Length: 345
Ligand SMILES: *[C@@H]1O[C@H](CO)[C@@H](O)[C@H](O)[C@H]1NC(C)=O
Image (cartoon, rainbow, N blue to C red; front, top):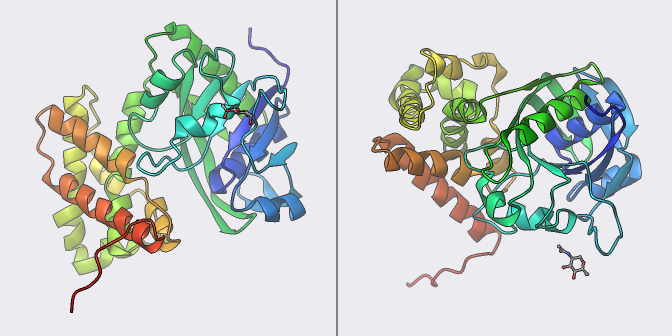
């Protein structure tokens, strides 16, 4: 039997995705949410969120049960462990703090009670937690949502929230622990009746499949400064033919070499994932425009390393990887984090 009573959920990261997750969980009545915010904390703490949502309608001045700007320290604050911790921040392993050290104050290394959910993109994001939190069940959350924070605390969600939950493999735990947790969380997430939350039995397949889009259109758009509609129009479609399709086929081959067979037509489906006229800016392009760091290691680096290790040639992905690395370096320089030799005249 699944427990019906409320569980506490700590959500770290209250941007476009985390805020909708928080709202949705509290609307369902089976979760009591503590939301940790950073850049939008002052705006939300004072005025609440203003949310215009295709799932929830117009919501003014909304706040989760608790809103705070630090990760709770269970020891010093004498707090009981959370039922779930939902990590909704960007996952950027090359820029500190690492996700494992970020959650540390709220998740003791020997935890067995709290279930951690990584609502983040990319491959192998659970692996660092096998070392830092070996007995914590870690779930994969793949969000397919169109949601944007247009100003601090102002969220526009124009595409329904569909969440895919599944257990990451953990050799220290029985297989059932993770899948029972996934079922329980999906039920709580669906309780409001506004969204669709499905349990997946094959997290690796789901993640590789989403990478066909994310490992290609994210960096290509971010590097070029073009949204997906303009990218498809550029050069009368030749850029898609010359760069996008070959890169996507490399990801499909790498997935196959890792034992994940993606269906015929996945490349076509991802190229045409949205109409040209949506002029959609993938998250990595949005991050570059905001001057933020990008998630290129988990989206490009991990599939590239995995594919090459299995002997798959990935020249297009490799080129994108190094160009994305240069974009990251450019951002670091702009943030004053790297020093370069003075220019000689
Ligand atoms: C919790 O706070 C105490 C006191 O400041 C500190 O020593 C400890 O390292 C914190 N715990 C974590 C995991 O950060």
